[in-house]
Length: 461
Ligand SMILES: Cc1cc2nc3c(=O)[nH]c(=O)nc-3n(C[C@H](O)[C@H](O)[C@H](O)COP(=O)(O)OP(=O)(O)OC[C@H]3O[C@@H](n4cnc5c(N)ncnc54)[C@H](O)[C@@H]3O)c2cc1C
Image (cartoon, rainbow, N blue to C red; front, side):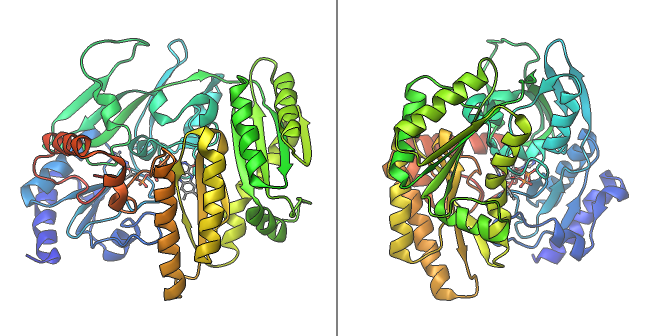
């Protein structure tokens, strides 16, 4: 049966259950909601777009999809970088963006309950009014949804101290593949009751159920951070300085690296007097008790490891201006008008120098433009492949370099996906990381939740 026929059946089933204002059958609108931001990953042709406003409407949409026998692809804000939210042929696209209410902020228990479509930065701003902090801060903080962040277990700049999304998810409401509504988790600090199904859903990329409500842990808002920058002539001492900072027991709240290619591009587009001859720039912050003393100690470690220039400040405004270099890397490369394919691998911190050296070697050998930025404190690097997508030869070399970086990370005891998830982009590598037994168990869990294979088929596992 063709996509159009599936679409007619689905529309019929939806109209019996879901208010008309939630259903969108216009092909152009459906197309706009059918693709995330992954570069190479194609999207299928979705049959219909549904934009629910409540859990009951999600249930109704799931029941309609089941009655019509079509797959369902949940979507948050579509900022994913792996094709995980891309449509599959004949699917019901379920965009959660209208379920964007902050349901409550509990200042005594330091928790909040939100719908999945809340944008991360809106939640941060709302809890800040109560002196609280929601730490997970993907660079897409202004545009990605909490539901998407939970479904990808998003990371970010301050994870090095505060952890990733997983560390803040206390409970969920989920619509299962058969339309039942399940609540997981707890509202207490502690609980030892039953299996951790909440944890199972974090990072599940829409293949286990549709998240309709999230209970999150909050922490007291930290005082403004102190900030340091350190330039190095070569990458290796920078990697060694990072390792030493942690070995000495420091706990930076941010530790980012920007390589020479990135420094040069940022300086070319947004002149800010950067040292473009340096091999890399380390950006570091400390927050909390004795932040100013800690940043001075960290700076001294960088100097002892051969940093050519080190500067640290207590003033948060000046610190923010220093961190701006990192934020400008992506927009600076966008100025080239080329395709940008970000890698997302992570290694144990002590293997970072080897990862950085290996990435440089891969770039040179494959003749690709490969600036590298990343969350150095987490060992999570984002080499950014910049290329002309119309040049077949260059695209072929980019694909080789991409795969080689993944294999390099694995060889260094790392992971193929640090924080962006697997989607379709990294699916080909999953067997290289997960042993066959674990993969079999994971696939069994998936089919237990979704025996008919309706939820986001072809993604993640
Ligand atoms: C400029 C830029 C910078 C970025 N920086 C970072 C970064 O620093 N760290 C990082 O981790 N990521 C980063 N990302 C990637 C992306 O923003 C994250 O993966 C984010 O968590 C995706 O959220 P989203 O709302 O856009 O989800 P989508 O892209 O819409 O969906 C992502 C996945 O979640 C599933 N999903 C969404 N909502 C639900 C739901 N309610 N129930 C079940 N499944 C659901 C989808 O099916 C899909 O599998 C960046 C992206 C961009 C464009």
